[in-house]
Image 1 (cartoon, rainbow, N blue to C red):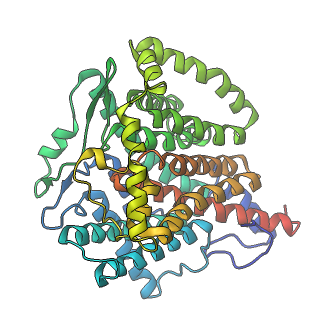
Image 2: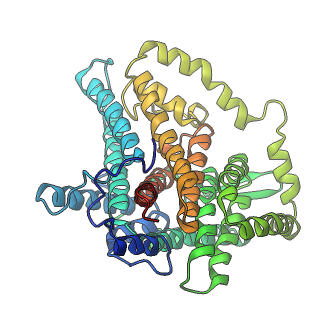
Length: 466
């Protein structure tokens, strides 16, 4: 995965290598001066809708796949596919490692899916086949988000326009979490009551007790999902605060503080882990002044949180230092022998994608890699690892290679989100959670856009044009 060592063919719409083209590239890498293109409205609406519309509300005849964000993403896929079929758009030039990761996961899923329906992996139930169908639908929706984001975000102004929509959804989620935490009410129930044609499908756990405090989930399904998703958004919010020239700066930074609060309000070990990974990956790529301010401001913000919320210190400390026999840990470790036994029965392609239906909550596999091992075997596990590892590593390489500060920061923010998703998928079955499962592909798409812009930048550098 080397960047910019061959001219190759640049994507349609990319700057050309002329004296004027050099200045165009330099301008396009600056959010304040780059040419703002036409970022699809549907893509921006979908990015915000992931957080705004409750994923527990579905169109009953469609089932669990009938949520507003998933339907919007599928519509995006239909439009993208149609534009390719009718020659209105050529996706071939937009090559990036994240697209390869998506292709591998699609391949592994299809192999296991065929095995399930053909009977190669043994008998299956109607519920298992329906679950497999939902997982395949999710992958097509994810493909749309990845491909359309990469192929339409061609300048830094495009990226900023998209990031504003994504963070607007995240801000809504954090405000819901604040209402849940301080007022102990769930505003998402109000949205559920004004969605005609939709039915409540369950699956969400808004409130959970931990120590002296009440954990909240915002508009996500569980506190752990909220913690991980907010950890992924945190570096991107900091990046926006540094480089977005539109709007009021205090509003941008208030959104960043709300993300930090939401992570704390989940009282989650995964939240602490995710935020730590995000900052460790992202901060080294910040401009020098921004790095210094981060070192100064972050301890102050954390101290303010601990002092402003009574009981937060003791509750988080007890969560990070669990006693022997803690059920949240024992249920995870008890899964290992059971997973090994199921793997031995179907080691190659598993029981079928999504074909693990636990009888009770204690049997849930709180680990996406274990879930992939059971449902798609060693083939699916390898493809799942690629889906979580390749995009983050590619974005990190782009961050190390990029020269423009805004582009370097964007790639680093995407890399941080990728590493959060990669590591925290060890702590919960991430692709079973609708908000994470649709947010992560958006970061892969952003990473693809950053990869291509970095490649264009380096092509000119290697030709001696910059």
